[in-house]
Image (cartoon, rainbow, N blue to C red):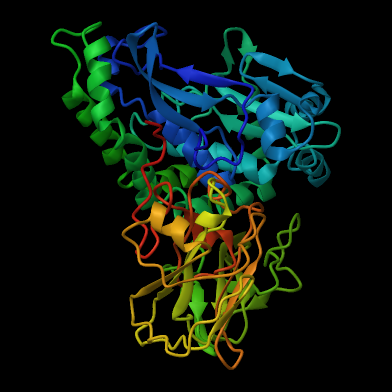
Length: 563
């Protein structure tokens, strides 16, 4: 099993055992903290912050929880995390470790600082409302990733960032700087807050605060920040209340029992009676309570600061996803009723950068659209020279979802190809005729007397009947195929007796597909029957080693726990 289940990286130069400082039962009530602050201990704030950066931007520092023993003595609960250093950057973004410059709140860590220094020199000079100066910054900084980084710290009300607790990395000679959250213990005091940190800390200038304030002078950056806020705070984004709370519960649920050992080891260091699981329950719930209503709170604070437009973007009906041909698409203006709606269907922005004018390719919305082909829609509201944040969605036009689907693949079992299997399920409402249907990619033809597959039923095919029976003795195997599923990914297609495609998947062992099914013991499981079966977003690794042939896969194990 991989050390971090959702990471494509298998080897690590540096892993950090984080025991916490400000928010632990053992406690360190220094640096202005009070002993009572230790009652806020959840052990999960930092892990939640880093997991949220991954959910927002795609890359961040992974973590998991372990019990630590030193020479047989139980030492407590620890969070094992990746340090976002040069090796981390090379592993996730490519290149050689020596080509990466990394800095943190304490100063340079490694590498050539020329591009990082040039970025902050521009921030120091200011005047980034000038389009040329802003373009120079955009050549040195990953603008969208940085906007996500800022939003996340605002969302969690981080009081210990900007002046402290950050990492940044840039690839030489021509990369753009990316920022990573670090040490997020001092979050979730009272929900969202627009806070940029102290001007100086331990004699060091707050470079991050200066960079944010300089960027906020530019209207294009402010709108990019608003666009990313709308993306993450609404419509199933990474920071909707439902997703923020779900991530919190996924991380904290495995700690429910683990916290008992931590309490026994350290609960009486500061308090008498000691801190216990009951105190941890209160602290965990307190964060959940803050998440309730946090989206509206952040939007309100951001509007007060001038970081988010007063004008809301349009909404869409249907909101996106699978639609049938000739479906009507309605754009709904904001409740204020103010403004005109402009949209594009070619992936471009309806707003023209720099000038803020309506883009030449943008179309004013005045009647529902008819969807005849797969479409990506981008739209904004425009009123009195002010643009809303960007609303964006995609529609996949199909006649109807295929009722028969390939729902599970064990394409690279660690024991060898004899243990492969493929699972089909009828997700429709009518029986499916499989007689004389045949596969491409593997070689198998269903017998003429194959009974219809009823709604909700499964069929499992394997490569070797004896090996399958050994590993899955209680699962009926319908038949065995010739050939093998490729360990590197391939197209698997099932056609009926007339040649019409009944089910298909083009899977891969790279390009964003789940990592652990590639030889680590998990199977590949379909999680979105209505989505694109050829997209990695429609699949995940199985909940347990070996998969679940012949039945629906259970929910995945909670994130962030390595028992």
